[in-house]
Image (cartoon, rainbow, N blue to C red; front, side):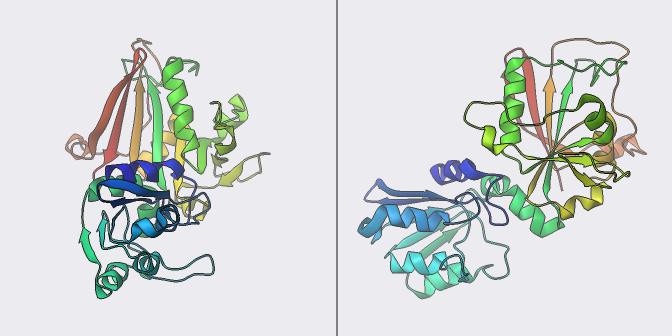
Length: 314
């Protein structure tokens, strides 16, 4: 299942409205088929893995990060049917598909055909990897990641607004990798007009995965090259299932006030700024309410900077 989860990450942010799924087929202790949902949502992971495995899939075990679909569409057959036709003897599933067209029906169809099914293996990891797909269905909006670069004393910039660069090259490179895994990148109107950021992916081989540029502004006068959204609630209208919020401080605070941040990327640099800009009011009325809202998922060093990844506890 770990290998299937890793494969699913290859197209995270590029499969909407379909989930990014990974599939590994194992026969006699050997991997005979690998697949992951392709950009645009098709082919599905199971179809790709079965095509690679061929006749070796008969009697094999398939490990899939999401329940195989049970519905036939104009773009392809149901994966539960394909697994039965391929002769797979057992299917191990990480997570049930919340799509009402499947939602348990895929596993029921497999069992009815005599295929052994196990569900719930590494479900939390699968949910994290498909957070965009799941958030869109649960909350009706994309999954939102807020990125902040901070000094040791919590400043996001000097008091005059200078923030280039708080972090070093390794942290900035990681930020570009994160951009490549999101369909949209969002900044405030002030940042868009004053800084004129390109907001593209500047890593070799990933430039084609630059996200669409979005501006959060109550003034919907168009800015060339940007999609305009008048408020946080308008995120539901954006295409794709992943939004990366990069700035500035007022925009970050607006998302936090609306409780519309699902993941925090904090890049903490070993510098002190003093009298710098920090986040404005985020709507906190009681200090006790601040506790228990965020849980640390990952922490690592990127050069001299420390990355901390937090998830919203919902």
